[in-house]
Length: 187
Image (cartoon, rainbow, N blue to C red; front, side):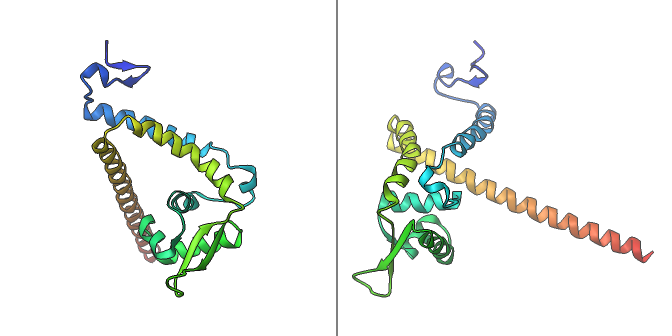
């Protein structure tokens, strides 16, 4: 056998090992399919009018699975600035998805939670992804789960760095083009 089933490298045929290039190839093919499947998850009818974007999903996931939290706690978990979370919370509060209430132990803090009216629908919607992850993660050891998560985070960080470098190169090329145009006009 050539170690591939249906064009996919098989780790079973290689004692659970996969060459780096085979793994990269498999992931380059797999990631767009994962993203595509995620995008095709239908937004429940009750939520469609709210125009929820991907940026809202992480926030809603934390609130659904971890319960009410302060804006600062959410910012820490989401790894973004508190002002970003505050804007998202404000937007979703105006739409009636989230509510803010005073923290009983610290009246200066506001606690954010999903409204009872939207909690069941959001729970059903996000449960699909959570169930799929549980199905995958159940068969892994805690160390394998940690490795998977670490690898996905490292990939996301590497892609962010690549995007920054591409933007910088594009800006430099634009400046060079502009300088060339100004030089040609001056001649």
